[in-house]
Structures are given as C-alpha cells and as structure tokens.
Amino acid sequence: MKGEGNPVTIHVGIIGAGNISETHARAVCETRSAEVVAVYGQNVEKARRLAGLYGGAVYGDVESFLAHRPMEIVAVGSPSGLHAEQGIAAARRGLHVLVEKPIDISIARADALIEACDAAGVKLGVFFQDRVAPDIVRLKKIIDEGKLGRIMLASARVKWFRPPEYYGASRWRGTWVLDGGGALMNQGVHTVDLLLWLLGDVSRVYARAVTALHEIEVEDMVVATLEFANGAVGTLEATTAAYPGYPRQLELTGTEGTCILQHDRLISADLRTPLDDFASDDDQRGSQNRIQNLNASATSPIVSDVRGHQEIFADFVRAIEQNGTPRCDGRDAWRSVQLIEAVYESSRTGHPVSLAPREKA
Image (cartoon, rainbow, N blue to C red; front, side, top):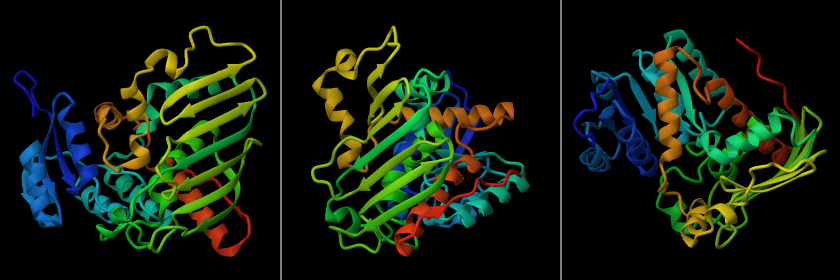
C-alpha cells in the first residue's frame, strides 16, 4: 500500500482476480501517485482477497465496477477471450484501457477494441513487458544502429513446461473460446511480439501445431518457419511440454555477427566490431539467484518480478498525461495476434500463409 507523502492522482480498477491481476495490482501500488480503487472478479472470494492485499472496493458485477468513481484506468487481466469485450465496455465509459497480453484472441476482436478506444478518445495499451527489459532494449538499439548488420536469421525457442493441473484446474486455459490457443497464444506471444518489435513484419509463415502431451483442446507444441518482410528468415518453437522447462532463447544473426538473448538477458554479442562495454550475463550477474530467476517463467505462470509490468504501467500513465502513445499500443499488439492466427491457419491447412500489414487508420 502507499506510504505517506505520495498524493494519489491516478485511480485504477482491476478486472480479474487471478495471478496476473495480482501482478497488475502490485505494479500499480509500486507506481508513485497511483492506487487500486476497485476490483472486479467473477470469483468474488478471489476479488476480496486481492482487494484485501492491495485496496479497492470489491465488485461481482462488471457494470457496477465500471461505474465506480473516481477511476481513470482499468487493467484487464481476465481470460484472453474476454479482453476486447471488457475493454470496449470500459472505453465506452471514458476509461483508459491497459490489457494483459494478448490484446484478444482474434484480429477481429482486436480491431473492435482499437476502434472503440479511438471513438471514445481513450488510450489503449498492452502489457508486453519485454519491451522495457534493459538488455532487450539494448539489443533493439544494437539492431537499430546497424551494429548487427543486415539481419539474416532468427531462431526463437520457448521450451517451457506446465504440469497437467495448470490446465485441469482452470476453466479457460487450454480452450479455444477463452485462451484462443495454447503454447503459442498464451506463452509464446511475448516472443512473437519481441520478434516483430526487433525485426519488423512477417510476410509469410509455414507452421505445424500439435497437442503432444496435455489433454487440452489447443496446441501444446508448435514449430513455425517465418519469412520477414526485410528478407530475414527464422524459426519459432513454442511448447508447454518440455520438461522441466528452459529459459526462452532468441538468437539473431546478421552480416556483422550474432547476438543471443536468454529470457530477458543478452548473454552473447559476438560482433565483427565488439561492443566496448559488453559483458556476458555470467560476468555481470553470475549468482545462483539470477540463474533461478532466469528460469522462473519456464516452469511457473506466477510473475515474481513485477518491475516490467510496473514500467509498462508507468509508461501508460505518461502517455495519458502527455497525450502520447503507449510503449505497446493496440495497433502494435494487433500484429502478434495476426501472426499467431496465420500460424494456426497454416497448421490447419498444411500450406504457407501470407500476411499483409495492417492498414493505418
């Protein structure tokens, strides 16, 4: 909770009361001049628990929740297939909308949410916290400054593990209606966003998605070949069936060398012109605690380090105050859903799928 001397100017409502909504609430409470004022959850007991920890009135009815005032922002942490519906309802009441990834489970729903926020004159942002991780920001700068040269090859691997109860204890995980997919739409979407942010649009994809281990409707394993508009080619693997679970790894090879990212750490930068100030992750942070934290996402859905979410939230507040664009807005987040839809279509049809850039408003 807030301490003395920090006047509250931003009032936030939390939609959802599960693990990720607790992360959102923690991020709000760690942001100066912000507080949680309302919590909505279909499971009222969970909502009461969350409000007991982080503050706010408790609602079991979404309409009453959206009428709560003062409230300027809603953070949407409900099942993915409800993001657009609930975000649209909030926008129509003049509330800014910050949504957990993915923006929703289809580009049609994402379009509807984007259009509703535009019509209401409110900001729309999406929690893609990789975009604020220091080493990933550094990798982005290396690419943008041409130090990696022309990117030729990308290899992304999200080889995580989730036990059967991860799906069995949830009404929505592993379903098409509310999860929109499996290992790719839920776990791999951060890496999809990262590839698009670093390398630009994908023009064509060929993929195979299978359910290899878990008793769920959707895939728990996918492999895709990506052709980027800039001429690079890449592979993407995502799974929740790789016991015991390994850190996400991204390797980028350009004409001037190769960089390797593990989870959110740049562990290697082998360039023709070496970086003056580069040290590997082991050189800088080689403790056992760092290694354990590196693997946390690979084995657990619980976010223990909320600094990324907190920075995304703080950035969203700045966008509101300065009438700017959030770090990842709705149109940018739309791209990852488009690519994932294309992966699923390619797997269903057995044919490559071409993608066209989203038309600008």
